[in-house]
Image 1: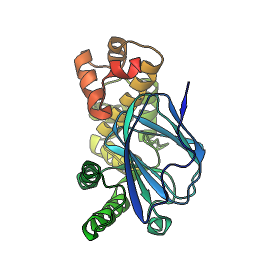
Image 2: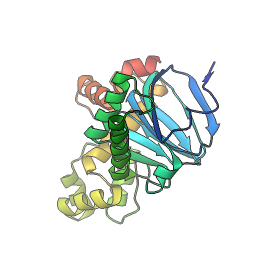
Image 3: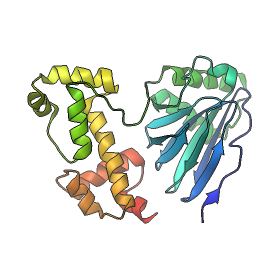
Image 4: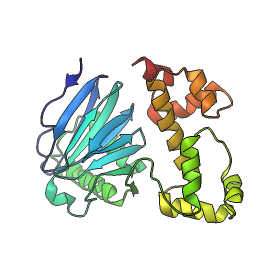
Length: 255
């Protein structure tokens, strides 16, 4: 049976508060709207949050930003270790106005880890309040994407993205894709950075991760997923998966 987790996720921040929690597989979070912003960050596992009807996914190294007033619900398909930062509405004025996937800086992660280690849920000292404001600055400065796996209909890059989504295991290099598209590797690389917001290698790794999660959830073996995604051996696939999710493919499939 699903485990329903409270109607309101956290106390109103004043002006910033934090929570680090383990959620069991099967936990569900009913839809809600809240008058504050949230930064949601998985230390281990993969979080799935539907915000205004759009599904966002955040493996470790990436976070999901939910602006004040956005309708959202979530589910934990596996055990996850999760950090949530609540930001009062006045501090959200120059933060993203729509839901975004954010890249996390080492500084932001270090501040959250420090607060968690010291059990700080609400900064009270002058020093901790300064750290909390630095964290808000880091949210503001973080690279952000409209989706964990952005797409494009660009005349050169669009067909490459579409073909890889049909066949994620295609291991052709960017140079090979460029030749097939009748352009240069430099041109295609630049378009990846501008139109997708990240290098080609990062985009393809995200595609592989999402495809792997989908295949594991439907019951495919680790060996089959590894082979279908073009890995030379399961060990290389397992290493990639563990690095990006904090858990192994077998553990995720069992949960």
